[in-house]
Length: 190
Image (cartoon, rainbow, N blue to C red):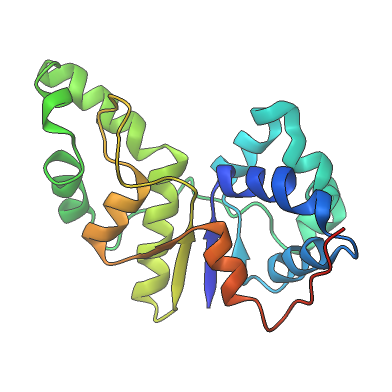
């Protein structure tokens, strides 16, 4: 099983769970899963973690700033040359199924093309493309996000859960992930 985790889920982990994790069980679990390559943090998410909430994720998950650890376990996962398994089909889906039509109508074709290209390089899209590639290679994959499919905040493209639903990617929240790992951790909260 592979888990791709987004920035907001990591932020929720360090803000709402780790402060009560008396024996560092969650800290240890996440470190171990990353070491084993079972949990993947992509480069775009890592970059967001450096500046979101003043770098709280990296300061609380200190192993993510250890250069030896990062090099040894190839973190973050590089996505610069990552492409979808069926690139033309994925682009058509970006232009049709993943776009919020009300927002699309407000843009010229050139503006839309620019925004689509930016979105293709965004962390959300790169995580989804990585999931598709892992699924194609036979892996069981979960994309962990705290986003909901509802309310798009006037954005041009749908949120991660809505796109995952269209693509058949299992999209779960951080509490759902912890439930999957429940047999591996023994939590004692303060």
